Length: 312
Image (tube, rainbow, N blue to C red; front, side, top):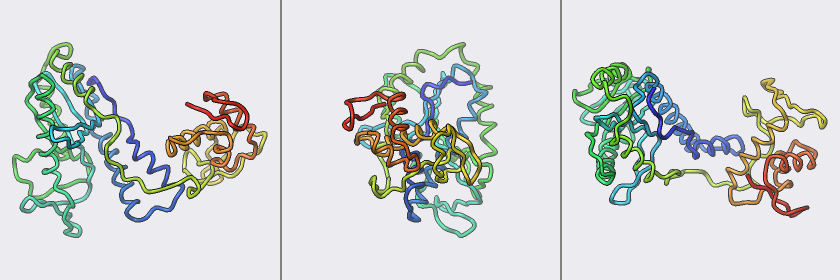
């Protein structure tokens, strides 16, 4: 299996959008945005699965946010560095039948044109990465590909020579790479140098975000079921577990409260975490002492009494 230098994690914006979707009413555009975020992440995870049987000396950096010489940001879903080549791979999770006509992409079902041309985006990303490569002090040929990872995707009228990998082509693409690259027993110094440089210029957080406006008072309060995300009924005060009346999922009350605290901190990172605030957020936990005791066990307390707040 390849060596993962930068593993993939669920995007922060997607996590926050999911949290908000349970606690506020989304507009149609917000629902579409959440769907696109989730679909994009699922596509990236599908791409990652193709690395399972690849050589150990190949290096992979996932979900990169970089900045080119004009101070413009660009994203790379997956950067694969082999001894001979740097592959810039952009995962596409589209499904259904589509066709190309004069460089325009259309859905066959309704003849609706794609809002953006993925080849234009891919070319812009490749050009920006070339600038990054020059600054790294290394030299690699660059191959960039749009990788359509969904087996239910079909593209008609595809001209030859386009930098695309359709679902039926992905397997042979990786097999040919492995066949033509016996490689050394370990990564080369050039590979390591480029990977280390990319890690230093990568930004941990996306510079773009499209979260809806929200505040504490406007969000629905309560504990969410870990399994189905429905709101839970109050547990019996002396009981250590809580059962979802919708799906029957059983979870420790302590674990459920801790998940709610993580959610609260992520949505309101600049506000103090107090027993009273967690009590309001959880809603169905009737005993403040239970919450205070849990906060004291798992978090660092600052101050005492009613002024006490807690830190992760």
